[in-house]
Length: 215
Ligand SMILES: N[C@@H](CCC(=O)N[C@@H](CS)C(=O)NCC(=O)O)C(=O)O
Image 1 (tube, helix red, strand yellow):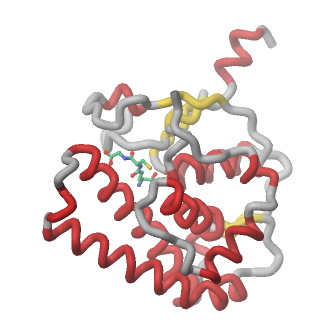
Image 2: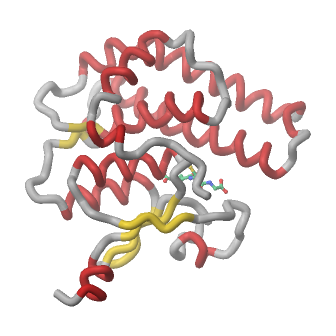
């Protein structure tokens, strides 16, 4: 295949190396051994959907493929999985059929979204810390983190043992390490979550996708 066409066929992840939702997709790409290029969105305050690969939500990540564009981390991960060969055994959110597992997934994604809101509010207005809704969001985030810390052991034990990867573990890892990376919350006291992160960080896909601010 000529080089230009090969480049076109290579999927493009539109995102940022400092973004936790983007990192989920980059870990999946690494685990699925999918070669991709990263198109960095430099200004997250842009209100031009074109800067986000056409995503009307003005959010990252987005995946561009010859078949079309995929909005959002879960969609992106599923498409990367569909493109992989062999396909690893992945536990997806809809496979989590026990309350502790399903609730853990809900709280991880909600905590990630709350973190985005807190970071974006601060970026837009450095004096926003005193706002009542910010205080509520921080309280909710602390509540979610203590729930996750208290339930981490049973969550991890309840995951199907015959798996290569789960969306839950990848997103949990990205959440906990991002809180520390962005200085949103100190995480040292979450010993169960830190033990999980240390173990999960031994995967090659983690070393290949460190958080950093794109220059
Ligand atoms: N539902 C989306 C959420 C993605 C999201 O919130 N991404 C953040 C970056 S980590 C973002 O684009 N923030 C821009 C904004 O809040 O305006 C997903 O699952 O991918």
